[in-house]
Image (tube, rainbow, N blue to C red; front, side, top):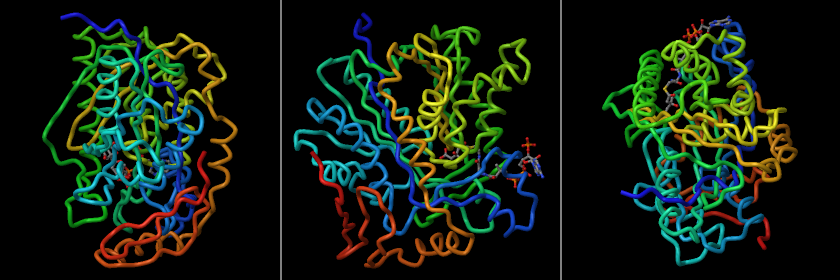
Length: 397
Ligand code: HMG
């Protein structure tokens, strides 16, 4: 077998999040507990909360629009939409997004699902398509709204965001290296049956399962020629809450018997956690939001540096892989815009958050119209005749 000489990877990466933000102090006050359980204990400060007229399609399209505005849509013949908060059992969320983005009809569009892992499946599938034909550009969208039951221990680990990335030959952001390590295990740590709008979770077990998968994926990554721990400059983990990345990195350092102390380990992951601490769990988008956070918040020039990724999706499937940051990567970033988006979210109090959470259940299964709340470029209008309706608010070039 010959290996492809084509360099492939992520050419551009953009994100969008929900209109509202809830400070976890509101939740702590409701539970009558010390807010440091959230701020320090799980490492989360705020979480994005979707408005009535937002969903995974509007957020995903808003992330992807930025990529199309910059690079155009020529050569995009595949759209992979990764999510575990699907809006239809049959039609891909990607087809709704394809329509809103006015992409060419000559395009294959599918939705991918495996909890928080499927955006990484999308990345790997996209790399394969580009390696076969370097003229192809694949648009991957990962978009999720994390929802747990009200008054459950998972509630502080909700969130909402989307990322979109363009996978191409000769990428300007991150070249993805070939070795990967995989680990799949048929377990029930977190799942969502079709009849539920919120996840079922075995919280403590899910943490142990995540760490066990990390060991398994890392082991295969190394066996298949992956870089050694000390050849990796920064690490980017799936972040259901940022403390999970801290726990994971400590575990990996122990596995490889690294001499690094806690502060040195922290420096290897700190910048990747800044956005996630503010957004909450964005499921499939989370690890790539972590990558964006790392690239946009690192004062050090990361050109030529290797980043290690651990992608985990409950149930469970996980993968360890690595990429090398490309020279000139900073020109591809949108640092001011992204910080402004986080700062501009609309703060809500506990009662408003609770009403939004309950609204999803109240309208399930029937026709309804949403109130106009979001200022985003795409709006979810509601359901009429069992069809989801959307509005494009921003004129597109
Ligand atoms: P809990 O049981 O309420 O919290 O829920 P806890 O009692 O374990 O406390 C959490 C931490 O806060 C602990 O720190 C406490 O010591 C600390 P740790 O010992 O773990 O380092 N703490 C404090 N710290 C400072 N000041 C205080 C204070 N009080 C306590 N005053 C749990 C926590 C994460 C289990 C819950 O939120 C949950 O079930 N979340 C959802 C599940 C989850 O996120 N699992 C992660 C792994 S699975 C995964 O990543 C996949 C996922 O993204 C889904 C997918 O793939 O689709 C979830």
